[in-house]
Amino acid sequence: MSPGQIIAAIKDALYLYVIGESPFNLEHIRHRMHNNVAHNETAKGLIDMAAWDLMGKIAKRPSCCLMGGGAGAAIPMGVLIPLMDAEMMAALALDFQKTGVRTFRFKLGRSIAEDVKIISLMREKLGAEARFRVDYNQAYTPDMAVRAIRAIEPFGVDVAEQPVRASDWLGMAYVQKHVLTPLMAHEGCFSLTDIVTLIELEAIRVIGINTERPGGITDALRALTMLKCVAWVS
Image 1 (cartoon, rainbow, N blue to C red):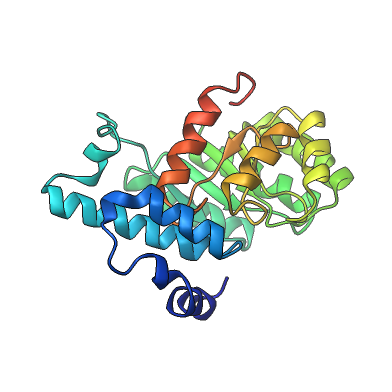
Image 2 (image 1 turned 90 degrees about the vertical axis):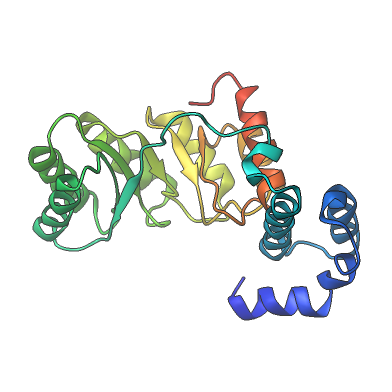
């Protein structure tokens, strides 16, 4: 959804199920939104986030405490490296590494040969301890994706994101069955229903949760709980 579409969904429809309600009645709000407005998960997710924030302010407690408590430990951050010339990508990654970053998510997908060139240079420059995630932005067909991911696996990759078309869930499942690297859906994953379907297809082993996906904090927490129950998920 575009920002304009999100605003329109809230102003034209979703506000009806929020105004006058207590944020502590979030499940009731969510039930009414889902029953009366199909899809629009991003818009609903933003309302869900706002409700959690407001609950924390009313209770004078951090919202994470209302969700079950904080993580209790620092979460290492990763940095995104855009798709450019291989030497430029490595130089940018090195600059981030000097600031303490140890996990690098970088774009691939112009060709398998260039993918290998980029990741091999990254590994050479950043060292064996650097953690790598790659994002293909739907660049390949399923067969090409299998070849592409297998070609970079010797360099050590934690996650490969959206190697095939967003709508090709069966293609994702095919790729995941033929590579060792865990796959993550992004462009093809907007709701809790999407996550459930992708898990049942064994098309992903990792989920990526944006602040507004998969329908707000409530469904994000449910997705994380669900993944804990799936033994094959990495």
